[in-house]
Structures are given as structure tokens and as C-alpha cells.
Amino acid sequence: MTISRLFLITGVSSGFGRALAQAALADGHRVVGTVRHVEAAEAFQMLAPGRAFARLLDVTDFEAIAPLVDEVEATLGPIGVLANNAGYGHEGVMEESPLEDLRRQFDVNVFGAVAMMRAVLPHMRVRRSGRILNITSMGGFITMPGIAYYCGSKFALEGISETVGKEVRDLGIHVTAVAPGSFRTDWAGRSMVRAPRAIGDYDALFDPLRQRRQEVSGHQLGNPEKAARAMMQLIDCEAPPAHLLLGSDALALARDKLQALERDIARWETLTRSTDG
Ligand code: NAP
Image (cartoon, rainbow, N blue to C red; front, top):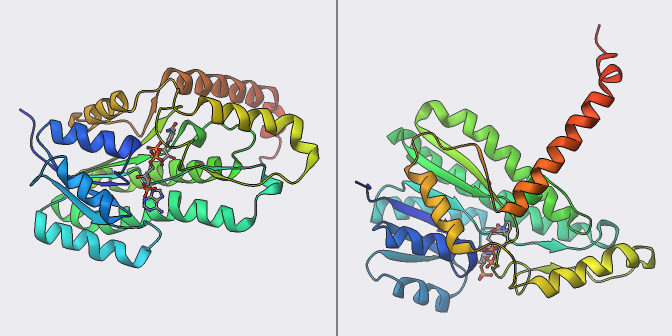
């Protein structure tokens, strides 16, 4: 029998956040979903009146996060699952992308998620129980030109997620970094921030990548509802993994990277070992 839990999911207006919320509600759980607009809040609560609760939050409003989590715990009960989903992709060649874009990318994708974990963990620790899903990306393990800031943010969240998982595993709390490949959400559409083009030297490399990403948006291989069902399996699993890839594209690219890494490590092993002593 499935235990009814309270989920806290950031960014439930569309995409993975919305799909995960719907899957959790369908399984009889209660869900607190964060959104950034009143209309989105109303639409979310309509999904399951009395079991779907919206809260307004921009995850870069760091000061607001702990009070929000404390209020949810006080009024709705113990948060069993935190899903750090809110995030977006910055696209642009690094040299063309202002540092301010990097800061914003990290504020949302990394600092926001960390602030959420820091606010929820005190409650989960007391109970010696809890699940945290951090939605990272295959771009937190493999890289491609034109999304340096995004990959940087997702590598950061992967690393923090894995480390926190080691810190809290003896306290009854499981942390999984969920790394999807390309899925049919608003990620490459309305949500993407695209740096303007400026340097002709990158035209040949970057223009086809940008064009392709725009063409493919909405037709990606991955189905967010199926991703949500996969994530729900983690919630009920006794020993969830520290990392989970989602999608055959992510799987193939991650395996290619592992092989390339292994080859490089072997090729340079003598030089690597030469610094001991
Ligand atoms: P999406 O449909 O664009 O959803 C993104 C969600 O994040 C929206 O609810 C959005 O709210 C929210 N959000 C963005 N910035 C926020 C902020 N500052 N504060 C609070 N909420 C914010 O795209 P998605 O693909 O589902 O994205 C969810 C997560 O999956 C992201 O972390 C993304 O990087 C990751 N991901 C996506 C893919 C993919 O192919 N789709 C692959 C790997 C990883 P608004 O509606 O208010 O904008």
C-alpha cells in the first residue's frame, strides 16, 4: 500500500514540475506546488481542490524560502518529498554571454535549489525521513557547445546533490539527482534565455545548433508524463540512486562520455601517477 505523502515541488506551471505534481496527485498524494503568478496558482489548485496547494515563489527570493517551508509544515503537515524542479536553460556561446547571465542561471538552477534543501532539511532531519529529487540534466554530466552556463549550473547541482546525499543518508533522507535528456516541455521554448549573437567566428559552429534547438522544441524524444512516472518509482523505492538518467538520448551520451573519460584516464595514467611522492 502506498503511503500518502506531502510533496513540495518548485515550478509546477508546466513541464516536469506539472507532470510530477499530476502523477503524485493521481497516486493519492498531496502536493504543494510553487508558481510565479496568481493565475498559475489558481490553475494548479484546480487540478485537485483540497489536495493541490499553490504557493507563490520565485526561487531567487532566497529570504522567502525558509518562511514558506515553515508555513507549509505548520499548516499542511510534514513535507515528505522535495522536488527541486524550477529552472531554465541559458543558451549562448560563453564569450557572447554576459557574466550577469551566468549569475542569474546559477541563482535559479543552483542557489534556489540549495536554499530549498537548506529550508526543508531541518524538518526532515527531526523526522529522520525524507526524499529529495533535484532535477538536473544530462547537461550536468555531458556538455555541448552553446550552453556553457546551463551545463555549469547543472554540473554544480549534480555535485551538490551527490554530496548532500552522503551527508544525510544516515539520517534517513535520500537525495537523487534526476538527469533528463531532451523532453517535450517549455524548456527550449518560452523558458529559454538566448544570448544575442555578436561574434562572427562562432557562426559556423553555433548558428546550426541554435536553429536545430528551436526546430526540435516541442518534438523532443522524451515524454514528461513518463518521466514523472519514473520519478514516482524513486519515491517508493527503498534505496534510490544518487543519480538517475532519464531518456535513451541521455543514456547514450552519458555512456559515450564515460568511455571517452576512461580512454583519457588510461592514456594519461603515467603522467597522472608521476606526481606522487
Ligand atoms: P518548463 O516547462 O519551462 O518549466 C520550468 C518551470 O520552472 C516553470 O514552472 C517555471 O515557472 C519555473 N521557473 C523558472 N524559473 C523560475 C524561478 N526563478 N523561480 C521559480 N520558478 C521558476 O521546463 P522543464 O523542462 O519542465 O524544466 C524543469 C526542469 O527540468 C529545469 O530545471 C530544467 O533545467 C530541467 N531539464 C529540462 C529538460 C528538457 O529537455 N525539458 C532536460 C533536462 C533538464 P514559470 O512558468 O513562472 O516560468
